[in-house]
Image (cartoon, rainbow, N blue to C red; front, side, top):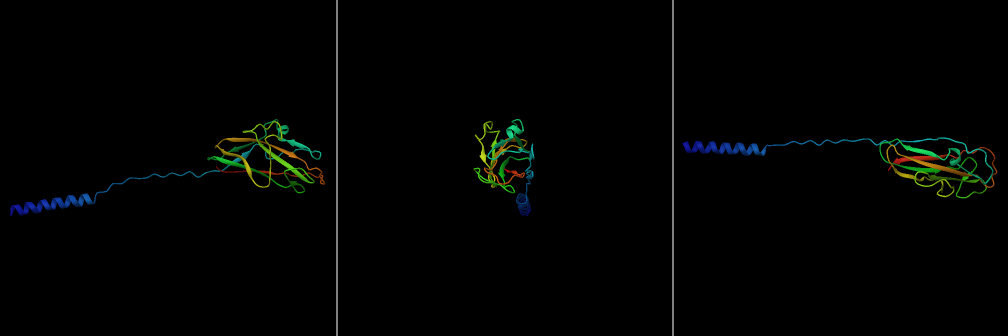
Length: 171
């Protein structure tokens, strides 16, 4: 009888240990963080006047801003790509070559290229976005120059607004 009680007691202890081992648990936590990306860009110049120019004549921001051009600054918190495009004016067509009521508007990335001898390193704007600069770091900037050549000939002698758009997007 003592053996039976002892054996029963031993089986009960082993059973409890097995249940305890089967029910044991361990916890660990995963901490996840997130930062919302901020795409933001400012320009040092938002408007300027090339002035009154004869037909088939070029002017650039080199002479207007003392060589400093226009500066696009990444005010966001991620690397950004800057794209650039032009537009047709009310009466002139944006083109790769001058013509009757067709004008040329060009850009040059002054941060990466020597823009002091236009049209060297200048690229004709189109109405579709083109890369101005890529992977501009947060708080980084890109300086650029613009150059406009008037139509030859022009049949319109009123002021034209030749807008240029700079677009920032996540790199």
